[in-house]
Image (cartoon, rainbow, N blue to C red; front, side, top):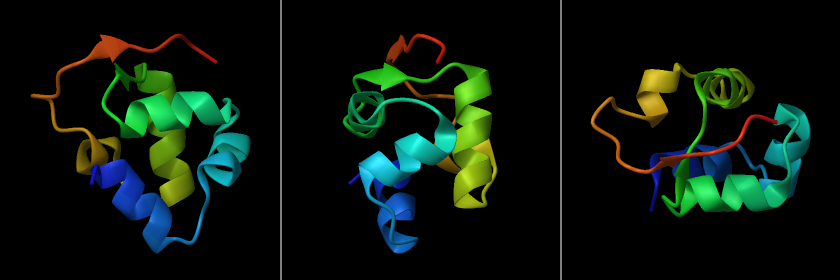
Amino acid sequence: MSELRRLRKNRGLTQAELARRVGVNQSLIASIELGYYRPYPKIKKRIAEVLGVLPEDIWPEAGVGKEAPEA
């Protein structure tokens, strides 16, 4: 399970609710959780803010993936 998914579930949020709070669509959250995309720094920061953690807590710098488009 991805760290993003674990944190989201621990906070009782659905992908749709997290997406709404971040300002992106649910499919982008799903793609990030599955490791298909790494979000741009702006989106990383917003997701981390909503979850109450630092971006580095979710995405270590060694992460691999294609950058997701800006929201």
